Amino acid sequence: MMDRRVGYSAEHEMFRDSVKKFLELEFAPNHQRWEEKGWIDKSFWLASGQAGLLCPTVPEAYGGLDLDYRYNAIVNEEIGYHGLMTGTVLQSDIVAGYIIDHGTEEQKLAYLPKMVSGELIAAIAMTEPGAGSDLQGIMATARRDGDGYVVNGAKTYISNGQMADLVIVVAKTSPEKAGKGISLLLVESDREGFSRGRNLDKIGQHCSDTSELFFENVRIPASNLLGEENRGFTYLMNALPQERLSLAISAQASAQRAFDEAVAFTKDRKAFGRSVFDFQNTRFSLADAKAKLQLGWAHIDWCIARHVAGDLSAAEASAAKLWHTETLWQIVDLALQLHGGAGYMNEYAIARLWRDARVQRIYGGTSEIMREIIGRSL
Image 1 (tube, rainbow, N blue to C red):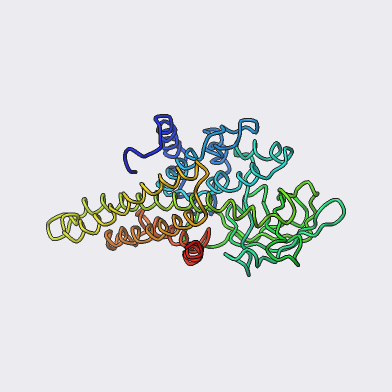
Image 2 (cartoon, rainbow, N blue to C red):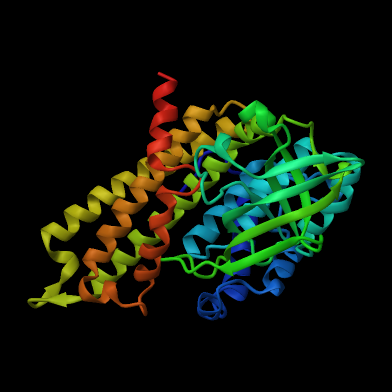
């Protein structure tokens, strides 16, 4: 990480140290097992909650620490650096915000304390087999029926899908209104008609469960509507700056880890009687990466400060997501190349970092969609 980060106090650094120690204790001994298993044990969620790592921005009235987003960012950075692709960041940075901002008092009291403690795992179901970045094209419906809604549809690529106890479902309550007829609904996983498909077989991020979800005449009470009916698309757009900033932070931290792995390996590895690091090509390549990382950390701090102040725009967040995920790919690919044949072996951390990095240019909005959003702001 870059030294002397802008906008962080001694208190923030104490929190960072506690996050590092927690991950070394709870993550390192279990990571390989979770990679093979396909998801992270519930005990890790509970331990994360006990350590104060889940949903730091939740108000004290609902069991949270009532902190600002910088604490989320610290957790995100350390998890990204350690290479732990976990749905805990999704819970803290994305799902919790919807309930804080749009939930009723009853909904906040029912769900937020358990999300903070790790007792409840949450997901958000946007993507469908036929609708990805263009959410206006979703087909899932929530039809009003008496004192409730009946939800039907299929979702795919849903993070936390296998373990979720609560799913925010993006569905059309007024299909004839297209994007203006989308609502957010809270569906508990024990509702009749809800089912999970397989844990999807991904290229990377193996310990992060990603699933298909099915809703067949799932009946929920009207009180499970999150916010106002037909306002869901607006809620989703308003939440995107934080979601994309979160992804940019994760990418920056992962790029830093890939760089550190490359420096350590090339200094240790010998070729033609000297270390690989001593070759000019190696040093110059790493120098370019170092310059990008320095700029990246400064930009991340700028984005975080803008977001905490409530000023980070959708275009700025999209630019951050675009630049940092594309830069991650450049750096992690370089780092693997500098490992030579060892980089292709799964026993080396760089192989996993490389696999896990590829999707970051896709989820949360593809790089192409990010360019479209930025272009529209010009």
